[in-house]
Image (cartoon, protein in one colour):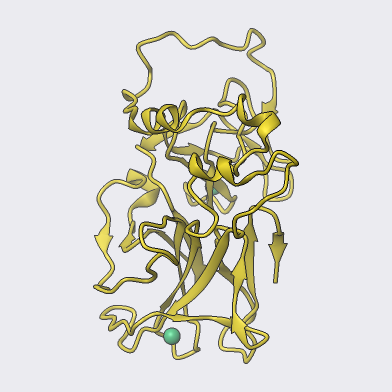
Length: 283
Ligand SMILES: [Ca+2]
Ligand SMILES: [Ca+2]
């Protein structure tokens, strides 16, 4: 496991928070508390409160940034060794953090992080022909190594990737992955979207448990779309999104798919690696 050097961040937390059985609901934050937590705007570090510090300055600890860790691996300083940007859009460690790898690609050791910008939900990344692309929905960040998720440029696409399964339903885990999907050189976009409509909201879905601990709502869904680029990478013309199919039906995993297209460039097969709350990693 990658380790981080002296004096670094907090231990990460799971990025999926599902409805809890009755016995555990008392331990969960209320919807109001969760909403309040999302509204917190942290001052830039150092914070006004004095952080408690490890008392062993040479301690090597697990790398982490608190709730919602979106890792963006890349060589930030151009020394040939992969570093790590971690986007944390939540609390208490909000920000895009640069962990310099002071070790090697085979034995990484990360330095204390440096904050590049505030954090944002739904970041994703891809490496294409030696160039790294970092996105949030509808946006690219060509200067991410210097300014994190500040500014950026809009991706020319005016459509809607997905409407929720039910009116008033909610989407989550909306991530855009840049890749030449069809092998014509122009970069397309593969989008993963989680749909919580039939599952229920985090607060409301708690009522879907029976007293016997049986789940009565539908499962979470996670769909993967292709937005084909019919122009060029420099001047894209994006088509309407279409669902990507597997075994004759749309890919549907449990919540945020976080798709990453693998395989040899311009090959006939395009494996898609995804992650989800309960199915871990699939292909
Ligand atoms: Ca480096
Ligand atoms: Ca293409």
